[in-house]
Image (cartoon, rainbow, N blue to C red; front, top):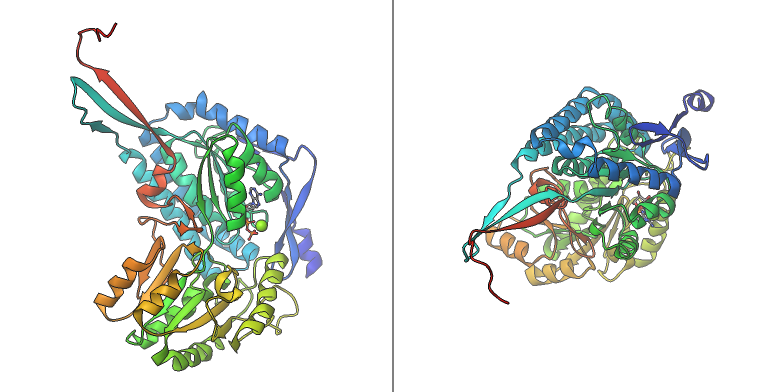
Length: 493
Ligand code: ADP
Ligand code: MG
């Protein structure tokens, strides 16, 4: 098995200026299937010289290339063609995404469908970028042009690889920017397959470049490069802070979508079946490797014991299995590093709280980074498992007494990406909505994400918004044009 798998190992290069090029240092790095811990591809590692070549290509394509002359209609059509390519290749992409990340194939299929929708959405939006006429009081005309921000450096995480690439590439291209994309080193495969269509659909060389490698080398070189105008990043808060510091040297625009420790709040009057489902879905979908995971589950004390019991009962029936099995509800974690990180929190949690379900590696698998879906309860909000982002299938259940207490606990976190509240009481629901300091609030649901609606965080979950018209804003500059309509000289001197 492992020798035949090894025979399939493919080598991918970097996509720079419309060409596939190897690394200037000759270095490669392996990419794994986390369910069998086998290498499935080798990737040319982009050095800082390679990043420089990619940025120079993007710079040239932006400053002097034909992309600058394209109409909004043509850019929209390019995005529609990309959406069609994604749809045509949906099953290949979903399978590759599932194999490389460990996520269940059924979830990967939803991701890929969302990728196509994202390109369609921004294809449509490309022709709706409007300027304004400004009501200046003098005998003059002032108007505003919206122009592309320039070369965008885009650094993405491994949990939704192609979808996170789409959230950044689609609005950037709609705006007329050029891009240097750096996929997460664990999961570059779908972005590289995607890049193989760019020439064929008529994208000029240099408009989209893909460079691969470690964050500290390839990613850092992109952030520091003076030829990049804007950095868009999705990833961990510590790296977000490093990026902001580095980008300060050249005063790049930055947008950051960082992690979270999102509260999922259940009042006693919530619809019971929906609530239990929502609590589990909120924290266990995609193995809990979700920035908006509802990893703090706040439950009103009146229903607390029964709630923990019902969650536990259902959690024990969650089917772990190989990612490509259609019955699998939870696959392995993405990498050995992530497995070690998550299992270390299992040990921390056992000292801080009680275990209702899970608590260890899923022992039925001899290989693969499988971790049991785990519920800790009687968690204090000051515990590490309630404060730190784990990015794995670990829920911390916290009891509360009444609305004010729920709001106080919910907001007592350095993060502010998302939150959810479950109740049948519309007054209470909206009071709670207004009190949360978070960028996304769901009422009686958790996790649905649509390209039409904004996504991003408050507090240490970052700033800037992706998706919808907000996502396009991130890639636009504003130019004010003043036209004097009065022929009289200024007459000042
Ligand atoms: P994780 O540790 O869970 O992989 P990261 O925030 O480190 O999360 O990774 C998200 C993305 O940021 C990846 O593409 C990674 O390569 C990149 N990255 C990591 N460190 C840096 C850095 N110092 N500068 C730029 N990019 C980085
Ligand atoms: Mg990291």
